[in-house]
Each structure stands twice: as C-alpha cells, then as structure tokens.
Image (cartoon, rainbow, N blue to C red):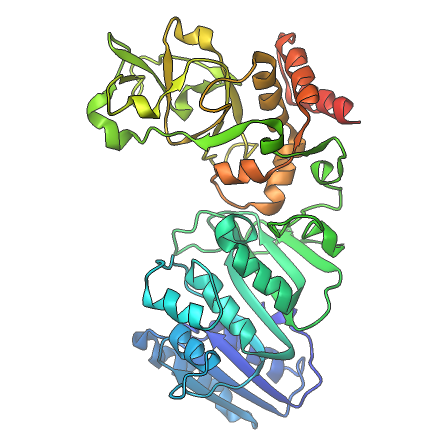
Amino acid sequence: MAGLFTQIPTDRCLLLDAGAGVGSLSAAFLDRWVAGNLQFQQVELDAFELDGALHSALTQKLDHYSQYPGFTSTIHGDDFIHATADWLSGNLFATALPQYTYAILNPPYKKIRSDSPHRLALRRAGVETVNLYSAFVALSLALLHQNGQLVAIIPRSFCNGPYYRPFREQVLKQAAIRHIHLFGSRTKAFKGDDVLQENIILLLEQGCPQGRVTVSTSTDDTFADLVTHEYSFDQIVLPHDPERFIHVPTSPAQDTLAISAAVQHSLDHLGIKVSTGPVVDFRVKSHLRAMPETGTVPLLYPVHCIDGGVVWPIPNAKKANAIQRHVDTDKWLYANGFYCVVRRFSSKEERRRIIACVVAPSVFGDAPMLGFENHLNVFHINRAGLPKQLAYGLALFLNTTAVDEHFRQFSGHTQVNATDLKLMKYPSLDILTRLGAWAMDQPELTQGLIDRQFGAEIA
C-alpha cells in the first residue's frame, strides 16, 4: 500500500491515517520516507484511533520515527466520522483539520443504520453511504489537498449495487482512480474479520483528470502470483452505465457481454422479472413439511438444483421438501410452470458464481403452486412461469463463461443478488428462445458446448 504512493511536488507532507490501529500503515509510509523514496523536509502525521487500548502501542510505534528531523505526529482519540463531519459541515466548535497530501487507511467494516448518529453526521457533510469503510474513504478524500493521494484496503462491495451508488458517484466525481489491486481470495486478506468477499487496495488522486487505470491481482497478501495490466477507464466504468459500476478486469481480454451489440436488452424490455424467493423458512416454520403430503405444495431450495435442472423431492434432506397451503403461505407461492432460478450463494470452490437451473412443471406432477425459498433468485413473468424454450435459453445464457466473467468484474461477493441480475443486459427474446430450443435437443450440455453455441448466436 505504501509503495503505491508517488512523490507530490512539496517539501511538507501532511499524512492522514484514519483508523490507525497500532500504526502499521503509517510505519510503512514513514519507512519509505526514511529510506529516501519519498523526499520531504517535513512529515506531519495525524493518526485517528478511537480504541484507547491501542494508543500505547501506536505511540510506541510512532516514537521510533521521532529521531528523524522534521517528523511530528498527533494521535487523535476522538471519533473520526464525527470529527471530520463536524469540520466539513462548518461546525463552529469543530477542531480544525488540514488539507492532507496523503491518506493511508485500513478502515473499520460495519454497516451504518439509517437512523444512527454516524449516518446523520455523514449527511451533514454531504456523504451518503451505508458502511463505515466507505464513510472513512469518502471523508478522507474530502480532506485531501488538490493532487493529494489516498490508498485504502477495503472490501469490494462498493463496486456494485444500489446502496453504494452515491459513494461511487462521489469518488468518481472528486478523484481519479489510478490503481486497483484485487485479492482473489475472499478470506485471506481480512483474516480476523467476517468479510466473505473479495478485497481490494485502491489508489485515488484528488481532483485530477481520469486516465488509464493499472489493475493488479494476487490470490492473497503474499503477492506470490502478482499480475499487472493497464486498462482504459471505459473498461473500468462502462460509459453508458447509469449505475456507475466499477469493473475490475483480471485479463486484457475484452468483456464479451459489455461489447456485444446482441446483448443489450434489460429484463424490463424483455418483459421478464427476477425476484428473491419469497419463502423465508424460519417465518413459516410451522407450515414446512419434510416430504409432500395432502394439502402441501413443493418447496424448492438450492439443494434441489442439480446439473441444470431440479431434483424433487429429496428424501432425508436437511431442508423441507414441501410447504402447507394456508392463508399465511398462499401469498408467497407461484403458479406451477417453467422457471429459471439462480442460487443466491456460491461457495468459493465452485467454478462459476452464477449457477442457473430450469424448473420444469413435470417434476411436480399436478401440483398447482410452487414455493421458492429465499436462497434462490427466480426469473418469472408476473409470478407465473416462462415459456419453456425461454426458460431453457435464459438458463443457458446465465451459465455461460461470458456471463461469469462479466459478473466477476463488478462483484466480489459470494452472493448473487436479484438486483445484480436485474441490472445486467441480456440477449433478445428471439436469441434466448433459439438457445433454449437448441439446449433442449442436447443429450448433454458441457461448458464448451454452451459457450460455443452462445458465441455463434451473438456473432
């Protein structure tokens, strides 16, 4: 992280470390300065750390650098969000903060409730975001001097999704993205935290024109398999994307979906809806049944989705196979028919993030209704099924390598949200229907066959 910074033409460095912990990031920056790689006459450090139990270790770490002429440091024990928001919003009683030339941070990761004091303080400062980590980045960026540089290690969740859109827009308006480093492992970079998503290191430069972006990748923090490429900015943020998703390409190969003229349709344009399965099992626990019986209808979980189709019922499964029809459950049920479903969660061992299956009504006999559990996303037409060929074509499209690679560029989650699927672009109904008809004629569908047929259709 410290190695990403470049020399700014000034003799005086004002360094911000927000959420300093025991000072490891500040020390890495100061080591570069001491070694002569960053040439300043003065380095003034402001280290914010709310946890007073860490102040002794932080002081000890920074005292090591007091022997070097020109170095001074101040440890702030107050809340960084409140202190910064008060200053930026013009509070007369706020402690004055400088315009920093550099900021380095490993911010805390925690959701911010909409009615919390932190959320209200952020709004006063013109920041709208949903997590402490993005709040720290937004406030640090606002404190930077023109041409100031910020390096942060943060989860990747801000790159997509509607909740982080105001934060993305603020970052893209105020700064240029210079470097993104992606950690491929979802668990190793944040070993001590429950952050089951990919993590990135981000270098931003305040108030500068956007140019090409360097993207590097490694599996983990050993950097043993480090790979670096450079991309034009329109490969990072697609020019006509209203959501301003931030893509992180991992190879120079072009994103097939992004550039294909044949994959430009929204689900709304196609007349298709996608929803999270409405049955939340713990809320209807008394109506669940291990196996189908009189008065029940099939209930589908991800466990029922096998090899592109559905196996039901599964005897001795840990999950229920049926749900009782009742005034309390009927509002959650869909008419029996053909559906395409996508599992909301993939395990890190699975080859693809998006795993789609076809639900065929013949599996369930004469069952009039179906229940879809909350861990499935369901493609439907107004809570009814899809035309048969369309259901198969949609599943084939979603199972292509092109879709998987496209999805990975803007999402590092283990989770595939209905919103993500809704915001993607799709082929036309004609292409999807032809793909479905072809898929239904195949005795076996391999990844190679799927990709070749899709490629031929959109060529």
